[in-house]
Image 1 (cartoon, rainbow, N blue to C red):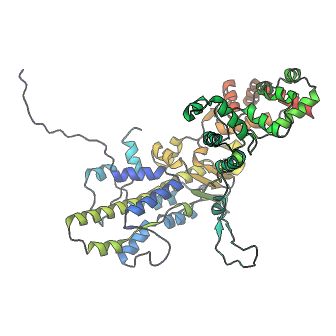
Image 2: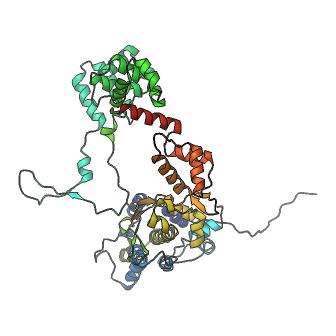
Image 3: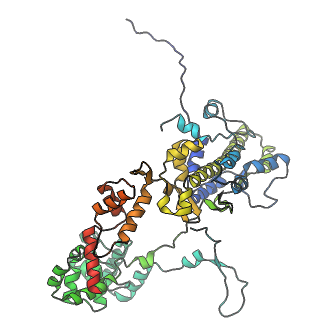
Length: 532
């Protein structure tokens, strides 16, 4: 058969994600801090975007602008919708009604057609169409500010200074050690070695055990390195520049003049101490039981990570994305935290002014593209907020007993359960619950916390894995010194309560909670009794 060339036309369907839809999905999974940074970048790049500051000047006075403001301000619409939502008696209809205010075009139509012209309504952030066609603390108080009062005078009209501004002036560990190096070390070569050792410290204040590479890098002998190390190990905080836990504790004991032969024997055999073999330790140290108990207490009072007191960064408070509180009628009110939702508007007035002045085709295309991009971003933010509210509302509804009665009543829940109830895809729910937090009467939790595996019950009911872990911890916390519960005993007790669980699962949960075995707990309790 002879080979010939010919032209053929074939029609096929394929899933294509537009760049705008990809941006909407990206925004959906960002935390509130990352979202704020992303919006700032977009505002810097797009002259038609601006933040709404609540002033009259920022809102356009034309009818079209008024309509745009009412459509694009997602935060006010969603807050109003959520405030009337009783999750124990409804299925999130208020959240759904808020979503209906935005466009609901299908993905197929959005990808098959060209991008809308400037001024049209161009957004399609129907996340579910994407995934169904593919594979698939208490409520924080307002930030406190320090009053900038002069200690010498009674005036209080100076500017306030935030906590972050004051903490930014704290001395770091590196600077603290360099200052000591300049005072305590005179030899220039040892100063260079000391500075290199400072730069090699990890976050806990430890050095690597082998310093041969440093000697080769600086072109000096190992003895020179050890001489400089001996000097810097006397710096504050005591214990820094150690190469092991034993050396760190030894440095602190030497500084207190408590590193005698008996203490040296204890520090050099920390692994035996960890096992609780006190009889062997008494033999190694050559001391009696009372002296050993005192030495153990002294070692426990030392700081195994001396650098953390200097370089620890200021703790960043978790700012919840969703707020939840009782409504006074037996239900719950769920609403978005407006402080975490960026308020962005498209400046149509500025667009009209610029559009009237452009002359070239290239300028008109650029301006049209900027307007489309701005509209997409504002609508995507609205859709993101709506989706977060719908998912959070359903989670609160499903975990109602947890919020009323505690962790023992945490219900087994999967992404599919929520996705089915709100008619979304599991991938969408997964993105919504990542790095998002909800402030509840029982504290602040990540939305992922409420999704736990189920453990079969003897009577056919399922138990949350988190609730079972909590039961195991309660059983161990309540055990007596004379009756330490083994994993097999815990299994029997749980089965009496209707929880069908295997011994290896109990061991896995116990180890995840960093609870030692029954043998180790028995030794620790015996040691505490001997010390008392």
